[in-house]
Image (tube, rainbow, N blue to C red; front, side, top):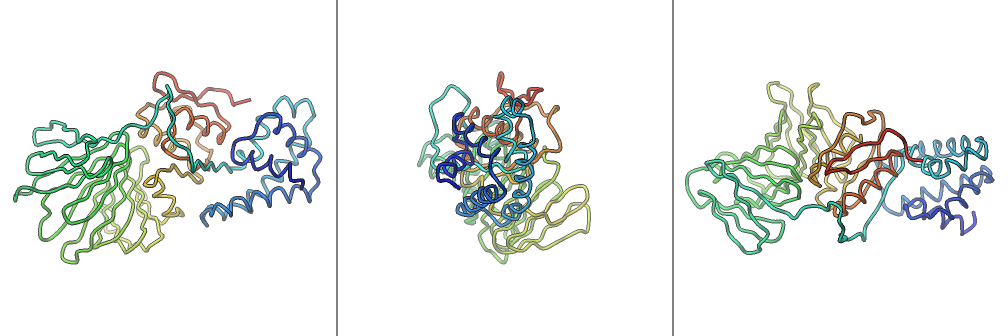
Length: 381
């Protein structure tokens, strides 16, 4: 395989190809023999392996290789006029319809733009009367709400301290940003966008208990005398000291629990069903019960290090995440239900850039109008 084609193909894989190079690549696809096509797919596989793709994703590579070769063969059989009239769509189809679109923006930084960008991290607390109090991004500042003090450590971290002896129920939520709490026992909870936590402080001598709506990454301080319990919809997670992620968004219709380290017991409310998770396992709690799912914990917690990471994910879930993160509405009525997306991008890019990447990965045409994401009826040409 010529070095020029290798470089052009690499620019195609990372999404930076231009129209001239794309035409060159299409001509190569038309003339290439089986050995050359095999060399091309092997190059793609080596490129993904160099990026240390997770094992769960790497398992798809043999299937992707075969689909890629099949797609190229189908493309070569089309009449020349049809091929070039749809050349841009066809090139995207070679990989994207096969279900392979991984975008790494490792050095991407926020850009000044007129389009919608991620929100500034703000945490809200409700007092006993239901009044909302904003914990603003002022480092080394302290807010007191009833018997609880909130000390801002940095732009996205707040320490929660009980200043009274009587347990006080706290409701804390973050609308469109990540936020990290440090509790009085040393446990740390990172909240994803549109997430709410409820708990009483100080914790009792017998237990530590919180309720979660949305998504949270928990680093629980070890305390054998006081188990830590997370109530998330129908799921109940009991731990002594461990690291795990819980996703409990109503739009998902299920609760997903991923264990990084330690051990947790997971049960379903109103039933006797109970399982123990081991590190590296993910469990889903839904109407059918509790079952183990093939989701790498590293993928589940990508949001905590600034990424959206989707592997074989539905458009409905992806767009719901975008809605929460960017604070916009989404029309989900016309979404395809049988399409899976592979995509990894930084969360700090403007919404329009995110939509452009999703359009390339899906072959669809999502647009933003009046703070609402809608799907145009026709495919991109």
